[in-house]
Image (cartoon, rainbow, N blue to C red):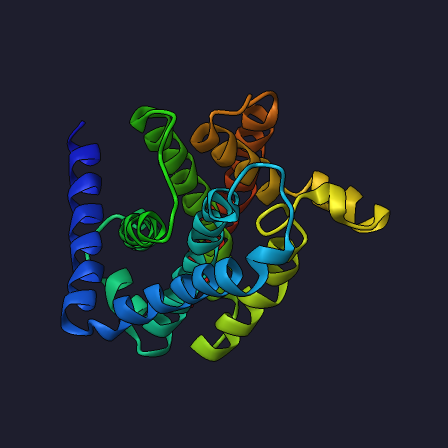
Length: 255
């Protein structure tokens, strides 16, 4: 119990340390919000009139997908932050301290979940201003936000694994986004998968992002959730089962 208390305290300290960085360098948070807002506005007003979704206004179809994309892209900051600490010698300092080894990784991923939740709230407010409506219960929407946060947390561990395997923040950024973009655009974030060609549709239908987006969209639009939520949770669990040990082992192997 005492060890657990010390570990929890170490994780709290590391989380606080990472959050203070956003207060001291607010540009990090500001620019984290600009890209998703641009995606939302561009797709709503430039492409929205040409995309038929069968779910009423395009903003109601788009926003759930953009929220998932936002936490997915935000999760890539986990690896960038870790490799930045690593390149500046901070990881070596942390490892020399009498603190739980798990605190560095857990603190980093929890920090990014908190940042992602802030951006999700901001994006929802922007969506409300341009026509998005929560008509099917605030608790359904809060459940959707919880699923989004859990999805972002899982992908933060993927990003952590990548960040600990490369040498520079620039490499971590490229290595992270190079596989995230096909996943994001080969999903139901922007258009129904039924509008895609057969080969891409087969990929998109079984894409973890599609399962999460479909669940979030069903909760916010009052549609049947079906098996999407179980597939989404299975993907989240599978990602964490694979990448949490990989990230931890990589962290332990750093010399």
